[in-house]
Image (cartoon, rainbow, N blue to C red; front, side):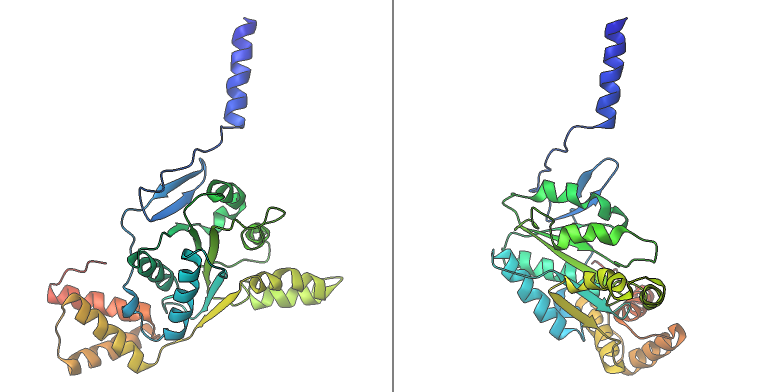
Length: 281
């Protein structure tokens, strides 16, 4: 009887404190997604991405991020990067395209996507990656924080690494619509309601200062918008008269009330469907 009780206690303790996660086989893929409950790195055999040369209007950000990533992949010093700015202008597409270009140059680099909601688990993820021969880009898309969100404290573990320091083989890239990762009204509220306003704001705003690279993305011009669509047409073999494409594309963006790389892709998707052309990303 006593043995059965001890066995049940042991099983309960195992459930409460599971064994450390075994390191995954990083030869399975070049990209992984981090999941929790239970902790695991899921390989992504085929990454959905756009070719680097199809990203129009972001030349400076493209060149800067590519050079930074190449340095890191070669084992040289490199910075964490925050890609911020206008929606739909290719921030996340650029990260994935740069990773593909580094792989194309036969440099060993893995990309691991991390959801904002899973930031509290980042210490466990870093322990998995620390000391590995592979080099990793941790990627968090659409990163931002609300007024009652404490996840930003977990992000400091990635950017600063705590007492152990950030692993030498890990770099962090994030995209956000906000330069300081937090709404402006949240920052102003901190200033007006805190006992020490400067310190309250500094803790949150300084988070973005921990990124060595700030790469800004701004709304595209009409010429850039049309050039994006033309690039997609050329890459996927879709033919259309230039004047017809221009008129349709301008009408399409007018109905959306916006002009961006995402809107250009949406128009091209519709065009390809009408032309009976399959799209392979």
